[in-house]
Image (cartoon, rainbow, N blue to C red; front, top):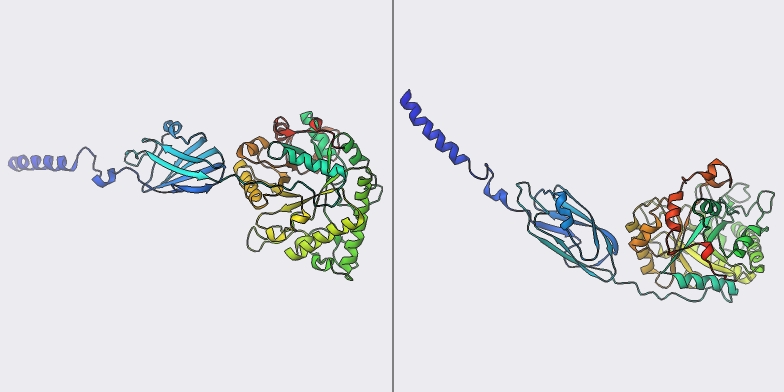
Length: 466
């Protein structure tokens, strides 16, 4: 027995030594460093978006990245904001990318580590951002022989485009400056533009709404503010109906038939256009120009996803019917002598088929809600500007979006911006509800950020455009 043990123990010792080496049992091939398999953007890519992007690098094995090494990652004069490793991917958030620049991302050795603690070699990745859009913005209004004040306002917008943004608020529902008063209460400054809505045209004049009383608009203009207006156009749900709506749901009013002489829809729109033209002419008599944004968001979400629909009746019959309606309104106002308007068309992106044409539109608007990323907003701005390089672009409506300072730092150069109203917050301009700082679409802190920027124009900074 002793002899057996004497033979067995050396053999066991040799066996254990053979199984234990400096690699602790790890196969030699497992000690290879992580190797970059692909990246987005790829090395040498061109036409990369400006502003903020996320660079994704995919490796051939799971990786980690010590936080102590993240400050070593560099990308020229842009900023590396965040580095995170997850499974085989390394994501790097970058901000401050400028137009027409070539950038090299440098990831030193030691930033990326494989599961066996082997470091990946230094990685260098280069790409080029998009060239600047060559703007050739029209200098004259599409309205023939506009009143001088309308051209003055347009010139003011054009002079500041790309250099400054003009602040704006929406009326609480219709015919007041309550939201502007709320902004003044919390920031000490009025916005430069206030916007009204002729949504109650069907009821005016009444003791609760009368668009012929233009005092509120006249006072705003006389205080060097700019007047803007839209129109949620209510129509009968069917012929002879006393129920009205501007939505598509359960609405049988046809935009296609509306421009056809002899139809009941045509009779309705002619009556409405005559009525609203008369109200707009009251403003013209006072030499008050209007930034006019009718028939907005026509395409709804048709181009956003399969099965998407237009949510307003004026877009429900498709692009051709919509464009005919826009041009019908344009010509109707022309014949009536309404020449105090600056025409704004609102894009839903991807809906160029709905565009009425350069001869009928002065400014392109975009309505954005629920987007907290300044880089995403800037990507939309850039995409729209690239398509409509001969028009100014504006954030014609917004709510719960990234702060103006973040949008600006990412490259958004809207002509003006306008958060939507919060009915409960500003239905009354005094009391505890009015004094609260929260808001359904743009809180007091959002507005304080906006109004404190030297590139945001407030009413007290407005020139006399009369």
